[in-house]
Length: 147
Image 1 (spheres, one colour):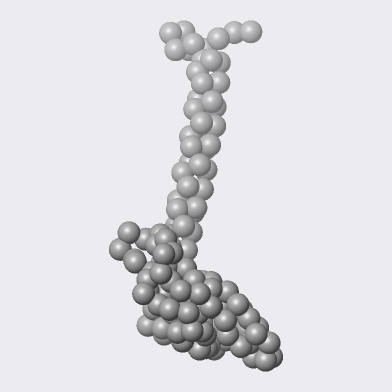
Image 2 (tube, rainbow, N blue to C red):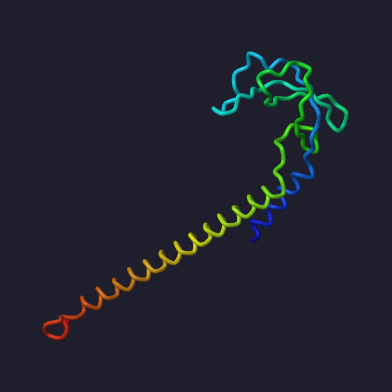
C-alpha cells in the first residue's frame, strides 16, 4: 500500500508540474530517419519554444515525416522549461501505482518465503548433524559404545 501511494503521488505531482507548450519546428522532418519503432513513422526534429522564464529553448521531439519548418507542435515541459514526456492520465497513474504495489507485495512475499526456506534448511541440517552425532555415540547392536 505504501508503494502504491508513493507511486500515485509521484505521478500526480508530474501532472501538476508538466505543461503543454507550443513549439515551432526549426527544421523540416523530410529526409530524417524514422525514430526507431517499427510501427512508428515519426522522426526526431529540432523544435524551439519559450520557457516560463521567457528564455528561448531548443530540443528534439518526434513529429510526422511530412512536417515542415515553422509548423507549430505541442510539446510537454517540466517546471523549469525543459522538455519532458507527456504526463500519464489519472487512470494510468492509478493502474501503474496498483501494479507497482502488487509487484512490491510479490517481492516481499518472495523474500519472506525465501527466508523461511533458508531457516528451515539450516534447522534441518543442524538437526541431522545432531542426529548423526547421537548415532555415532550409540552402537545399535550392543546398546552403546565405550570409551
